[in-house]
Amino acid sequence: MFATMQLTELDTIISSLEQNDQILEAQVDFLKTVANRHRLKIIMALGQIQGEMEQRDLQKIIGISKANLSQHLALLRSVGVVHSRPAGRVTMLSLKYPAIKEACAMVKDVIARRASELMPAAGR
Image 1 (cartoon, rainbow, N blue to C red):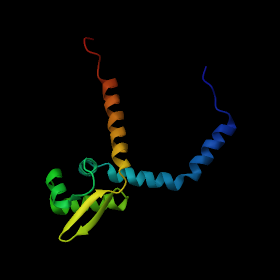
Image 2 (cartoon, rainbow, N blue to C red):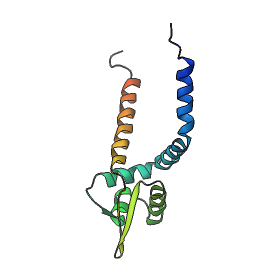
Image 3 (cartoon, one colour):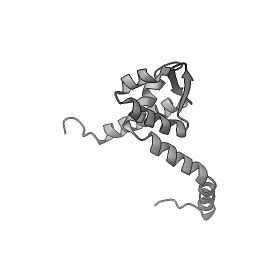
Image 4 (cartoon, one colour):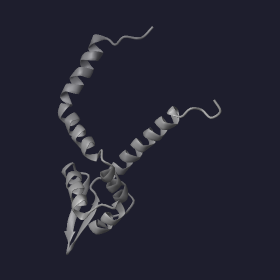
């Protein structure tokens, strides 16, 4: 027999979700923006360095055109993932919040665990 939540518990959950609608919407926007192969590569590349990287070096690593990289960086800046600053004739890039690389690593771990659960056991 399944336990049923009491009405007060349901009301508390509903109230909490309603109060967090703006935060949830911001999370949706953030996740939609990050959910792109090139943008994830950008996050992974910037997460592997201490400090900053020149935009042209990142372009070589990711393997896309300068214009395409600029578009991806603009989107990542818009949700607060990437910080950029001019340094003479070059643009220096870094993760605005290094914790984003840990969040991506957690997602990767969940996906790996899920994949191992879905794989049939050897010898069956």
